[in-house]
Length: 59
Image 1 (spheres, rainbow, N blue to C red):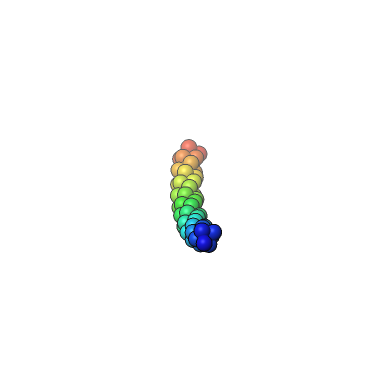
Image 2: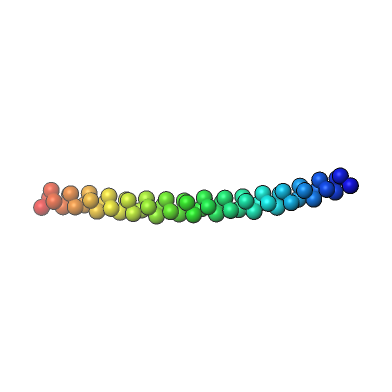
């Protein structure tokens, strides 16, 4: 009887753990996407600024 209750509790815990782990992985993936998006925007603006400075010096 105790073994059955323990197995049921263990299965329930593992199921909840898998759900929460999936949620955490999704949140991390979304965060990584946002970081890459902002990094690309920063790099593009930095490249534009450097190109503008070089253009101003050469001209």
